[in-house]
Image (cartoon, rainbow, N blue to C red; front, side, top):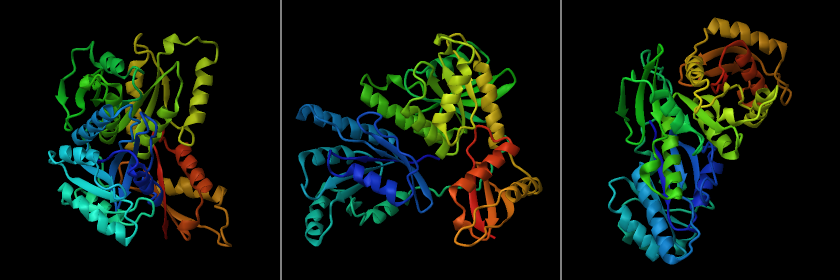
Length: 437
């Protein structure tokens, strides 16, 4: 289930401050990708146990008023198409402008929930002035101050009222097919990979238009391997304009990520791993997805004895701390190792579904704890007595201890490394919780 909220509004009304307020205050937003095109930002927010994707549509630098208005109109249009609900941000200090009116006019035609956030309301006078925004005609109008955070809670309560609570404890259904999404930046070979996997072979059962209307699910059943491929690559026809395209493709890639079990992250061998790739990678990891990294166009790289080994070493350094992921060098054009990519994906899926018996877990992990005790904190010696795996989609482990709040990051990392060393969780993020025994 993926729910997306877009923040729209003209520049300098405080959209990014509002976005960052959620980012800092509620350790809620898990990741933000900035600077994709003109400072758009993406994150995963969590409010009262409800999780949603948050998109800040970013400001434009206008060349002239007309271009500017049409750009903003386009942004609002895309947000209306792609998001589940929309926050229109306005500024009490300047009052209602023509651009606010124009945006409100477009938003009145949508049947999706629209929330008006009147920003910079930080004293009684401004609260009176803010009432003029009711004239925009939206029932859900909230007064807030992004900088101090006052009023943001009420708005968030209203936004998440429509979102069903996450059912974390649902176990994976036995017969569900693994879902693979091919993700990565434009022009790295995502479409070609999809076509190489599907195009030639005629035994593919069907291409079903996806449950969300923006991704195509293809049922793959060849060479004794069966899974669903979520195609995020076929989104180029939407518009000729690069910025719109980028915006569409990012929203859709995030949605495809939400649906997938495994993300195949395609990189361009020539460019290596860029900051944008790292962001896509960490977003997938934070969402708890299994990951396989595919370095495409390997046929074009000049090779020496240890080229692949050295290249892989650099990749792992940049992906740290979560670098226990399979890395495969492929060439879609030459069809080199693309079936191996599928095998690795299925292997990672198996790792993601792995359940470790409590008895085995305790035998191994309590030995690891005995070999290296948690550091003493404020004179307390931390004792871990029992470990169990939780029934969740992402491999999660609860360690029962006398002082759960005092276990620090280095020791958490040690426990994660021990879990990885003893049980095969390659390609899968692991979550560790400390609970009072």
